[in-house]
Length: 411
Image (cartoon, rainbow, N blue to C red):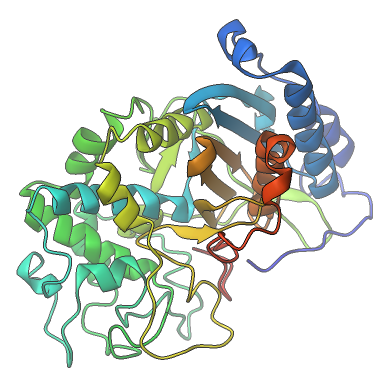
């Protein structure tokens, strides 16, 4: 993600929200955790979490943020900070819906692995077996390769009119077919399996494979086989036409540091790779369900979290040796972890799990260009650091956690 360094100058009143008002609002605690959650999270750790988040928000001028943690395989705490809608003074809560951006890939990967363990989706068969609408290429491409960004598909493309894919404004009633039209006829950027090339477009193709293997629409399959069993009742795709309760507004920073509305985006063309909306509570429930093997079996989960290796060594391509199937792997908090980050217009997100400790973190921010992964790592250290000091620097880690960063800063 290309980090933006905001100016320290006073925000002009005519352009963007007053900085002083933003800071006053974002440091206000806007929701209280339930007594049951407090009982599972020691008060000292809760204070550390809140203090770390408040300092992060002040340092980065974040309008609104929602976070949740999982301990012992159960949701232990969630909280909303700051403001979801600056113009109407609406506070963030743990139920506020944020754009997940590329955290959506973990959802799609879980759905694909659910089909695989049922014998309905062969991860190593040519993807056209399940998605005949995708043209044959010079080499065969498998769903496994697409899940690991080894499929040779390109990422977003710019043209003479600008970043028309990154800033898409067209709406597609058939999102998978509409998304495929962006790239289906383009040449591959590499031989499948040879090298890591991050591609959100590739996850649209996975969505098409899910439709073929599951014999129903991608959105319906995910809702029935991921969201419902994981108790994620509010998670839905980011339909710009729909009236969606608790959806946050989306913010960016101007060059002067002013908080402004983010660029417009219609994400209907990339739902599998970056088009879902969710809350901290729902995503914590997703983590709980994954840890409890409620969505896929333990062996399937382990396969999903096994890093994929390209056949050609690479230098300088972040994630090429630590990316698994729709999830990144690492040990940035001192213990083996898995997770994913995301960033697009008006959002910065990160989820992280420490499977051995049965711990998890969710960070959702309604501003782009913010390093959500850094905050998630700090929160995870609070959860596991006190009991894992002996494992710091352990060689059992899986490499540096994938931060889902690419030159566009849009995932």
